[in-house]
Image (cartoon, rainbow, N blue to C red):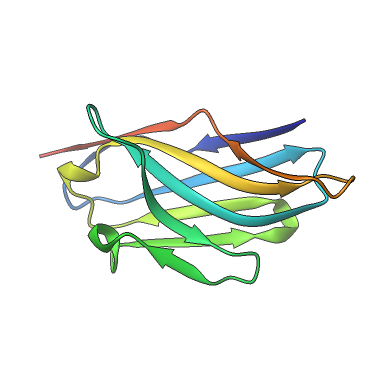
Length: 120
């Protein structure tokens, strides 16, 4: 089994910053693509940022220039640095990872989410 545990959420004022972390543990041979998604109340879950095992990144248009995704492969951890936060960034942020286990079987895993609230 594999666990993804997010941390770093909280309450911040407009214009503030937060750094989210997601650590993967368990039966891991390798981590492929990793990403951060968010879900605001009443909305569908949407991709915020993604990063490949080689470090290529992609971002939702709404966060480009403000958010930065990175990863530490030695620690099986992905980060999301969020700057210039806006009230519309409020939501539950979920970590996602494509995990390959020791039998070379790959599947997606999700964390339980961490709440980010941006006050106006």
